[in-house]
Each structure stands twice: as C-alpha cells, then as structure tokens.
Length: 270
Image (cartoon, rainbow, N blue to C red; front, top):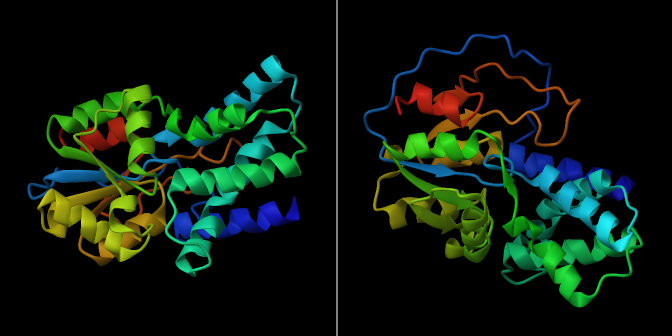
C-alpha cells in the first residue's frame, strides 16, 4: 500500500492545493458576510464538495461482499481509487495518454485495483457497473436543500473534472438541481488548468468576476481566483473519513468560508 499512500499525497496536493488537514478549530467565529450584488452564477466542484465519494464506494463494496462474497478492505479500496485520480490525469497532461474522459480514467484505476485487491470473480458487466458507481454518488445531507436555496438567487452549474454524462447521471440519481452541467471535458483540459475556468465563463456568457467558484479544495479555488472568479470554501471534514484534523476557521484567502451549503446560502442571502 506504499504506492497508494504516495499517490494519495499527490492527489491531495493536486486537488487541495497543499491539503486542508491541520488542527481542528471549528469554534472559530465566521467573518460576517453580505451577499455579493455582482455575482450571477455559482460554479461547483462536485467530487467531495457536493457528493460523498468515499461512503458511496464503501457501500458499493459492502454490497459486493453481501451479494458476491467478496471480502476486501473497502475503505482502502475507496482511498486507492480516489488516490489514482491525480496521477492518471498527470499521464494525460504529460502526453503519455491522449485526452481521456474521467470515466475511462476511473476504469483504468479500477482495473489495477482489482488486481491489487485480488478480486477476480466479477464479470465484465459487473466491473462496468462498479466503475459507474461514480455516476451514483451520494450527496452530502445539506447538498440538495442547500442547492435549492441557492438556486432561488443564482445560476447553479457544475464545474468538475467528471465528464458530462457522468455529471448528468449523477444529478438525475441524486436529485441535484443544476441549471447547467459544465465539465472540464468541454475544454479538453482538467482542473486546475486555467482553460477550464475560462471555458465556464465563456459558456455562461459572464465575466469571471460575476462567477463564484464553490469548492472544498483550496487548489481549485486558487485556480479560479487566478482568472478573476470570486470564491467560497465549503468545509467537508469527512471527505477522507472520520478522525482527520482540519482547520474549520474562516480562510481570509477566499471571499466566503462556510460549514456546508445551507450555511453558504444563509451567508449569501438565499
């Protein structure tokens, strides 16, 4: 599992801009906020910010244990699948692989994990179904009610590395009320490449400063800031499981810091 640990560290660096895990300080008061009058649209990171990939994958594995008798450390399996995400995208960026949809990168990582965890009894159809667990991820409890509140005031869009079909199926499965589904796929780049954020602004026909990026990962927010987006950090302390430490205090690097989407809606006057 040493390779997985190294890959996990790389993935956290790619997605979190250096990681969010620090000392817990959830009692720190929030900065008072007022809704920005010049923001028309909110764009959302999805994996980890809107949906709980870890719990979803563990549950899928537990279902395989119950129905197919497969015994595996599904917690480690989920971590390993997510840990392969950053290195897989790096292979595309380096030119080792051509442009590849996230569904296909997920399948490449999954094939390696099935070998590593010695899971050999699944048919091709079962492996394909397992790979599409990313289309069926469970939203955080506040996600749907919080998004519905925010939707009363703002245009809501995904801005995820997930491909369009994945994000569309996920929205249908989880009841996520997006006004539009935008994917890095449409730009031919992955976050945190600036082309992804520029594509979103272009397709929304809005200047970047009239868009707010919402994410649980600082690296994503900093990349959006670099082209002029406003930013909101939403803490997801359970993304990588319980027992982790995280700084839950307001981050002055960003325009807003929220504990969840309902908190963000309250701060934005929705």
